[in-house]
Image (cartoon, rainbow, N blue to C red; front, top):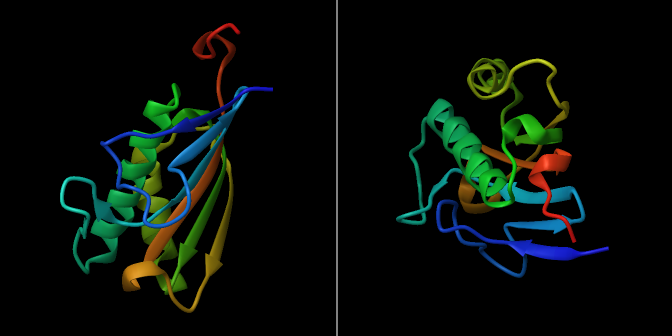
Length: 134
């Protein structure tokens, strides 16, 4: 078993004691992403659609850094402070994912870091050709 810490400047820096992602063999565990703009480490803005889009962009950057892409995500967890935003998640997710879609959970929460409206984490399984031989 090999364990590799994933880091990219194209996604927000970890705020605390965690890594952006951890790769164990062909499985990558992506930490929760909130709508931080990587270059400024500030929240994209208060519009929930913009926040959802930024979170997908952040996940995409980490997936790329791990040697995969969003199509390799097998499990996506979506945390929302307002579940009425869920139709927007579906709409925006349709711009980033194609069938077959990953397994997914949508969870309503009371609050998220930095008072954002959305956070997502994921599990990715890399295709064999994307995994370097050991």
